[in-house]
Image (cartoon, rainbow, N blue to C red):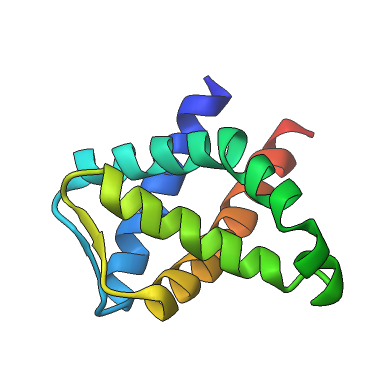
Amino acid sequence: MKTLLKIFLTALAVLVIEYLLKGVTVDNLTSAILVAIVLGLLRVIVKPVFVILTLPITVITLGLFLFVINALMVLLAGNIVPGFAVSGFWTALLFSLLLSLFQSVLFSFLKEKKN
């Protein structure tokens, strides 16, 4: 149940970010839910591989390259999910930063409710 709630909250965050950023388009709520699911799967399956492959550059940049990896995940989701598009790398980078911020805020309410 908690996972479904996180997916729905992430989908809502995607819709809000789509409203804020001009370079992001989401056709409908179904596309936003698919984006939330695909981003979650990419973070679990693909991101660890990217992190391991780019470990030297991540260490040299003191972890800032992880932002690039997150932007690549958003661009990849844009290619996978129909009805979701991101115009470019910088838009994807800003999208990933905003999504992380929104998820931190929204998920913190879930943790407070649990306690």
